[in-house]
Amino acid sequence: MNDFNILFYSSPQPMWIYDTETLQILEVNDAAVKRYGYTREEFIGKSIKELRPPEDIVFLEQAIKNINISPGEVASNGEFRHRTRDNVILNVELITYPLTFNGRQARLVQTQNIDAQKAMQGKLQLTQSKLDKLLDSTSIGFFQLDNNLNFTYWNNAAEKLIGYTREYVIGKNIWEVFPDIMNSDFHVNLEKAIYERVNVEFTDYFWPLQKWFFTNAYPGEDGVLVHFRDVTHIKRSQEALLEKIDQLKEVSFLNSHYIRKPVASLLGLTSLIKENLIGAEEFKVVAEQIQVCSLELDEVIKKINRKVNDGENLSEVAFAMEEFSFKGLLEDIIREYQSRTPYHDLVLQNDENVMYYGNKQGIKIAIESLLENAIKYSPEYSHVTVTLKVINQNIVLAVQDFGIGMDARFVNRIFLSFTKKELVRELGEGLAKVAEVTRRHNGSIWVESRQDKGSTFSIRFPMSNLSAFKTGSVCDYQMLTDPGVEIKYIEDGHYLHIAWRGFHSLHSIKAGCFKVIEALTKHNCIMVLNDNTKVMGSWEDAVDWVGNEFFLIMEKGGLKYLAWVYSSSTFSRLAADLTIDSIKADIIIKTFEDITPATQWLEDMRRDCEKA
Image: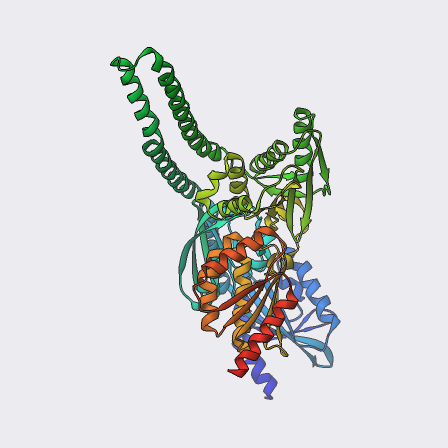
C-alpha cells in the first residue's frame, strides 16, 4: 500500500475523489462512509451535487467555476452545508486537491465538521446581539476604537448625542471624524488611556454642539472602549449659580457703598425740615440738595437694575443648534435694521454663501448688538459696512462704522474685559452678549479703531467637521488639525524662527508650543525669534497658559533670549503684552515691530554670549 492509500483510507476526516468533468464520485474513504451514512457502493457513482441541500446547489456551482479558473491549485473552498443519507445537515469546511485518478482528471475532497464551532458562533452572536441591543437602548453613548484609533463600534445613543451616523464613523480614524477637538482635554486624556494603559475620566466642552460631556475611557488589548453622557444641564446650572452669586456680590457692594450716602443725606435734610431748623430763605437751598441726592439715588438704583437685567438677559441667549445660511441671516438682519434706521446706509460686502451649524439665535443677537453699536456711534447719513468672509475654515464677520473711534486706553479696556469673563459686563449688555456667543462657539472677538476714523468689531466662528457633516459642506481636515506654526532652525544665527500664522485659540497654541519645545531641545537653542507677523485676531484665552506654564518649560529647556515680533492686530499685540507681563521665567524678552531689527538684536545677543 503506497503513501497515498495510507493517508486516504486511514484518515479520520471524511474524504472522497470526484471526476472534475462529470462530478461523479470515484472513490471514498471509511470516515466518509461512516459520517454520511451511505454504503461505499451507494457513494461511488453519486454526483457531488447529491451531497448538498437543493437550495445550496448554486453555491456549489460557483465554487466549481472558481476552481476551474485555476484547476491545478489546492483550494480552500470555505464553509458549506452537506446532507447525509438521513437528510441531516452538516456544516463543513472543504479543502480540495487536484490529482489524476485511474487516468481521469479528478480532485480529492477533505471535509471537516464545524457544527460545534457554528453552534458556538451562534451563541456568541446571540450574546453579542443582546449586548448590542442593551448598548443601543441606553442613553449613554458608547464607542470603541481599535489600536489604530479606528471606530469599530458606535451605538444609537452616540448617534443621538453627537449627530454622526454609525455608517459615517465606522472604519474611520477618530481624528478624521473629530479633527476640531485635537489638542483638547479629550485628545490628551484619550491618548493617556491608550498609550499609558490607564483608565481615565474627565469632563470636557464639545464646542461644535455647545455641550459638556462626562467621559470614561478604558484601554484593552484590542483598543479602547469609551462611554460618555451629556452633563450640560449640570454645568449650565453651576455657571448660572456662580454668575448669580457674583451678581449679588456686586449689588451688595452698590447697596453698601453707593446707596448709603444719598440716603443718609436725604434723612439729614428731611430732618432739618421736620424739626423746623431752617428758615424760609434756606428752604430753597435744602430742596435743591434733596433733588441732587434723589437723582444720585435714582442713578444708583438704575445701575443696580442694569446689573440684574444684564445677568437675566445673558441667560436668554438660547442654546438650540440648527443649520442655517450665514448670508441669509445677515440679509434678514440688515433688511430689518435698514427699515428702522433711514439715516444710515447699511452695506453688506463679500457676502459668501456659507452654510453653518450653530446657535442661530445667539449669533443673531451678537450681530444685532454690533450693528446697534455701530449705528449708535456713526454720524447721520453715513454708512455702516458688514463684511462676511471665510478664512482658513473660520467664518469672520466684521462690522465697521465711520464714527469718532476709540482711544487706545478704551480699546485696552475692551480687551481686558473680553480676556476676563468677570469683567465683560462692565462693557454693557450688548458686548457682553457678543462675548458670550463667541465663547460658546469657540470663537473670538477683536476691535480695530482709530480716533475720528471709526471702529471695526470682528467676530470669528470656527467651522467644525460636524458643521460640514450637517450642512453637506466640505471640511478641510488639514486646516483643522494644523496648529498654524512653522518652526525653522537658523544655523547662521543659532536661533529658532517660530512663525505663527492665522487665527489661534488655546488648543492650537498649545499644539504649536509643544512643537517649539521639541525643536528647542533638539537644537539646544538659547535664542528664539517669535514671529507673530501673520497672526490674525485675538488669542486672549491662551495668555495665562503661555505666560505661566509654557515659558517656564522653555526656561528649563535652555531659552535665554526671545525676540517677539508683533502682529498688526491690536488685540494680538495686547495679548502679547499681557503674556510678557505675566512671565515669571528668567528670560530676556524684547518686542519689535518687524523682523529685521529683531534678528539684529538676536545677533547682538549671540556675540555678547560668545565674548562672555
